Picture (spheres, rainbow, N blue to C red):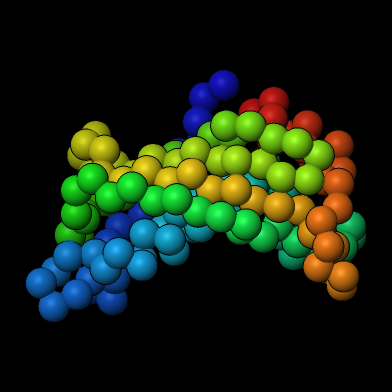
Length: 133
């Protein structure tokens, strides 16, 4: 399977006084890429909640920072499922600038019910879209 690719730019608001992307912003960039990956598969989180009471919540995230990103850099971020069960999936993500790897993330996402906030099975019809990308 080919990883999903998302592209965005670093703006002033993402940086510290030195023009370097603040470490916490990487979480936002990785999250944006996963949201667009879902949309690319025809899955919008608002519709998952409205129709099936599904929330996709981050259970854990491990980020490795390799090199800094700077003001005006164009970030390319990939999303690829590493593994999955009926209630969780692990997504590997990579962030590059000019084809140089600057950060990686391993994100565990859990499917929970929107009212009970308890784990629930991810409907197979949606899971199939994601794992056959």
